[in-house]
Length: 110
Image (cartoon, rainbow, N blue to C red; front, side):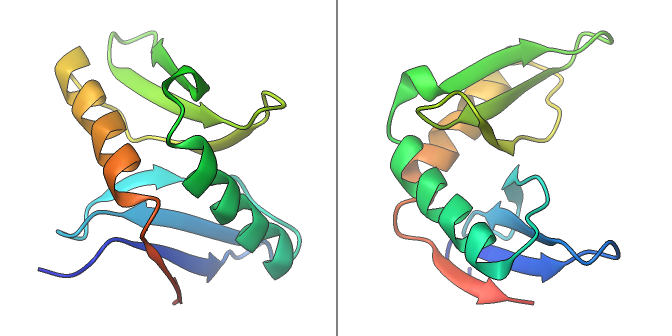
């Protein structure tokens, strides 16, 4: 087993993206694109802070009935989005995993 981490990578569009992974390596939260590395790192800090506030998780249902969530900052800007879950319970487990793993996750550039 590994450790929770924010994996930062550069996309084909030249922007920076991060994925928060749990100890088992599963992606539990993905970011939007950031124009700079500093902006991406600020986004990570925002996830660490806002992941501890349940009201900042917005639970959603896709048109096909799958469930997902977004994590928002205090200004209501989306800072991360989950994968799709077939069941609502899976989505709630995903939220719990973000709450547990984000604060102590290390940043790694891949």
